Image (cartoon, rainbow, N blue to C red; front, top):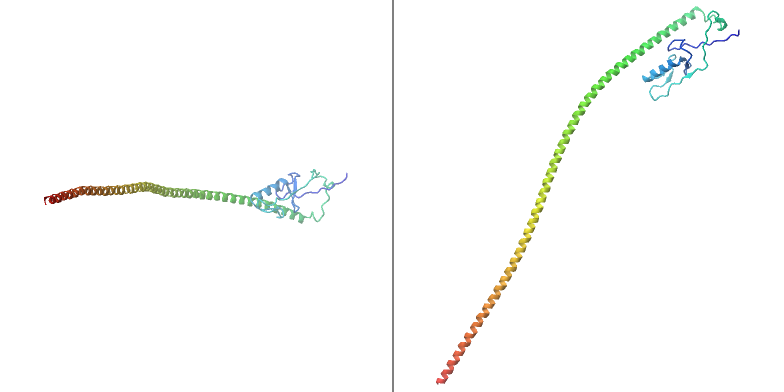
Amino acid sequence: MASSRIIILPVCAICQDDQAGADILATICGHLFHSACIRQWNNRQLLCRFPTNCPSCNVTLREPGWQSSPARFIKLHGLSERVVDGQNPSQLINPVPEEVSSPGISERLDSLEEKMKLSSAAEGSSWINIWKRFDGFSKQELEQRTANCGKLRIEHVYLMLDNIELEMDRLGSLSDSVRARSQAQEFQRKYQVLKTENDQLLQQSLEKDRRIEELQSTVSRFVGEKDSHEGAEKASQVQPQESIDMSEGLECATSAERLE
C-alpha cells in the first residue's frame, strides 16, 4: 500500500476547536482561522471602531474607522478530511524525530497550549468587561444627553416665548405707528378740505370785492351824470329869466323914450 503524507493545519487560535470543519481562511500574515471565527472577530472590531489585528501575531489587518479598507482574507481551497487509524499511524505519518518527541519539548508545548487557552479566556473576559463598560458609558451618556435635551427644549420654549413677546411688542409699535399714520393722513385730508374751502371763500371774497368796485364805479358814474344833468337844467332855467329881464328892460327904455 502506497504511503501518503498528511499535513496537519494549525488549530484556530480563536475557537481552539480542531473539529469545526475545513472552511478555513488565511490572513496576510500567514495564520489560519476558521472563516466564521475570523469574520466574527473582524465584525466585532469594526463595531467597536477598533483596528482588526491578527489574533495570533497582532499584525494590523484593517485600519480603524468605517471608511477604512476591508480586511483581506485568503480562502484555502481543496482541503479534505480523512480519518486516520490510530493503531497504525506509521503508514500515514512520518515518525516524529527524537528531539521533537522528547519530554522537555512536550512539556513546553503543553505549557504554551495552556497559556494560549488562558490568554484566550483572559482576552474574552477583557472584551466582556470592555463591552460592559462601553454599555454602561452609553447608558450614562444617553441619560445625560436626554437630560441635556430636556433642558435645551425648556430653554427653547423660553426663547420662543421671548420671541413671541418681542413680536407682540413690535406689532404693537407697528399698530401705534399705523394708527398715528392713519391719524396723520386723516388730518392731512381734513387740512386739504379746509384749505380748499378757504381757497373757495377767498375766491368768493375777491369776486365780491370786484363786484363792489364795479358797483361803486357805476354809482359814481351815475352820480356824475346826475350832477351834470342837474347843472344843465339849472343853466337852462337861468337863461330864460335873463332874457325876460332883458326884454323888460328894453320895454321900459322904449316907454321912457316915448314919454320924452
